[in-house]
Amino acid sequence: MGDYMSSDGEYYYDDYEDDNGDCCDDDDGDDSLVGFQALEPELLSAYANLPSIKVITKESLLAAQKEDLHRVMDLLSLKEHHARTLLIHYGWDVDKVLAVLVEYDKDKLFAAAGVQVLDDHALFSYQSSSSTFMCNICYDDVSGNMLTVMDCGHYFCNDCWTEHFLVKINGGQSRRIRCMAHKCNAVCDEEKIRQLVSRRDPNLSEKFDRFLLESYIEDNRRVKWCPSVPHCGNALRIEDDELCEVECPCGMQFCFSCLSEAHSPCSCLMWELWSKKCHDESETVNWITINTKPCPKCRKPVEKNGGCNHVSCFCGQSFCWLCGGATGKEHTNTSIAGHSCGRYKDDNEKKRVLAKHYLERYIHYHNRYKAHIDSFKLESKLKESIMEKINILEENLSTSKDFSWIINGLYRLFRSRRILSYSYAFAYYMFGDDLFKDEMSKTERKMKQNLFEDQQQQFEANVEKLSSILEEKFDNYSENDILSFRMRIIALSVTTDNLCRNLYEYIETDLLGSLQRTVQRIAPYRSKGVEKASS
Image (tube, rainbow, N blue to C red; front, side, top):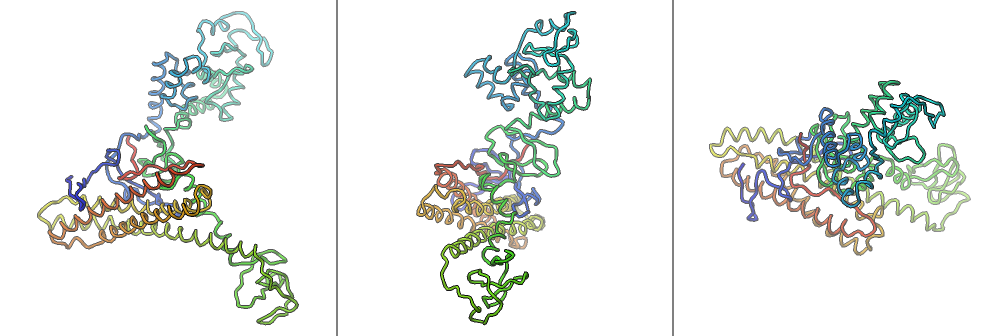
């Protein structure tokens, strides 16, 4: 594709690079109250893939595990089950195994993981003997061929070993089954476990093998299952920082750290709280606090539906709306017989005012958050109409047939709309009292909030401009008008990208980066959006 000059003198490439110089792609999702994930993933992604995130299918899982096993086996001259024990202990992180080996030594590396390597002759001397031995678990005398010796040198009868293994596997502890001997930290040989268990229960032996295989994902911080529902069967492996957002080939986009939908610029904690707040009844409770009073008899909330301050509950109890106190039924428009409540109750009034403030603040941020999700849903229909307009232009124009700049502008709109929506959830917690009340003074918070909102509003204004331009009926434009239209799209796309990047930098450096008592991190900004995994 070609390259074009933007309005500020910089080149704009159709397939441009992100901040790290990597050609990357884009995507994001959820159409629920909490996001865009349910929408068509293609609307948020472009085309290029990066090899830094790889797909592990059920078929390729064994090969991926074997690759890491053989690296450790070759490096340390170990058997496969010893290498697996090491890698499970260190989270399948080969680099960490090497780091511990360099910092300490092989003995300490093995001891921490429960790996003990003894001479094969010592291990088989018991089993080759014709003598009988006493099992220290059941205290029965058994012949050498009826007992099993583990790498640590401890031996017990096969029946006791088998019962031990069955209990551990059924209890979900099959990845690191330790020796039964008192204070022995050694992990049992998986092949011996498999042999003994298969004689008693072949199905459980298969379950044991499956647990060992899946430990490559369950215990590996760089590999995680795709959280799609229903599950697509894929896992994704990353090479770098686990704080990133990824897209599975099934179209599911998620935060690799918390497995929620992609949610930057919110941190994982912010998104967890916001999602819960959007779905639970916390704001319903606030509304009840503001708009109802509890009946003094049955304590059920009562809403006032008239102008008179004498209120009657369904239970028959009358009470004063002003103070909540029980009264008789006799009253006029100005007074209640035998009742007076002119004294000001400071605590109750403060609680009501505070509850009203919190509710109004939440409504402010949620309405804007939801408005951008709704805008995205409407804009998602643009893709089809834009492709139709491009087809018309290709038939009518005699010059360039390359209209990729329009598609780039459309994807820029989708990405920006998602980020803009989540920026309101971020602001709700960043400048509220839930998380960082003691991190900033009121003056500092107000100043930072003003700077954030200035950038947010500039970004928002450009997103709306880009949306408006893309809705134009450009299929009727002349060639000169198309050239002008192209420059407007490119210039606005570059400006929107820069404003979004600046907003991220301000969040990472001046807001989250300045926190002293808590650590909050967000997935880094990627100009082309969520990164796709490749096979």
